[in-house]
Image (cartoon, each protein chain N blue to C red):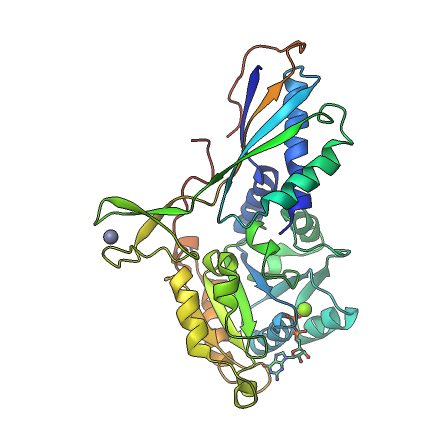
Length: 128
Length: 237
Ligand SMILES: Nc1nc2c(ncn2[C@@H]2O[C@H](COP(=O)(O)OP(=O)(O)O)[C@@H](O)[C@H]2O)c(=O)[nH]1
Ligand SMILES: [Mg+2]
Ligand SMILES: [Zn+2]
């Protein structure tokens, strides 16, 4: 889909966070991306590599992507199941009233930073 | 190696702006529909017909993000809507900040219903919240009847599906029932309208629904239910 726009957004978030924490060199950025989020992981990697090379803090950074499976929860069966082709119907009892558990995430989890950074130390959770 | 927590949705910046847009529209009592489709399914034509039919009954605004020619906007304006154009310069989807900027050119106090015509693309627009209340996807009988199976994300994220160009059914190999079945499989609460902008078939029902959307006093009383609950999308787990 719009991997370039996503990569741009990731870089902006990471640059802001790096500045807040006095980080000069980001080594890696960890993402959690759902398999049903529509993101092409290779395209996102390529877009990130291209844009990161233009950013002083991110020039050396690698993107580590954890892909989560598309899964849903069936309340009557009290069990979870794999969602195939976006069809969140319980394969055991056939109900449609299920709840998506994972697979749609587009999250920036954290970043690895160089040891030489004058890190503020406090990793405050000021955004969610 | 030291780690620094970020715990932020990649699209959070867009979602913050979308929330701002949603707040401004709610404060002005304006309902907003994000209209999405593949290229040429009939979004502009549907807007033109809907605005003309609801003229005098519902004050409609349109943010045009999918301009082929400026004639499109002129046609909708002539039908009786306030229209703002967004120059998207080859973008593949609209983002919330474009809508926020476009709101400046609209007199919200005088509107009941605001449409955003998204860029003709069934992939990218699905991920970007624009601050709308409802998402409507338009498909048509000339584009192949496997669209919901091929692009499930956008159908899963919508509340309403419009199947347009029913007048062409005799000439094409298109099974509307197949589309309905596929679409309901990815989104069981999807509300579906079948119509033809050309013949007018189905437009009365569609416009009746729009009228309810535009006049609904509470957001919770909007006539379409929410899509499936998505968990694990927002906060870090
Ligand atoms: N036969 C037929 N053609 C239609 C209908 N609705 C739209 N069209 C035509 O389909 C083409 C694309 O329509 P348009 O509204 O520009 O699609 P958009 O790209 O989604 O905005 C135009 O030539 C319209 O006249 C319909 O119900 N029947
Ligand atoms: Mg159009
Ligand atoms: Zn079950």
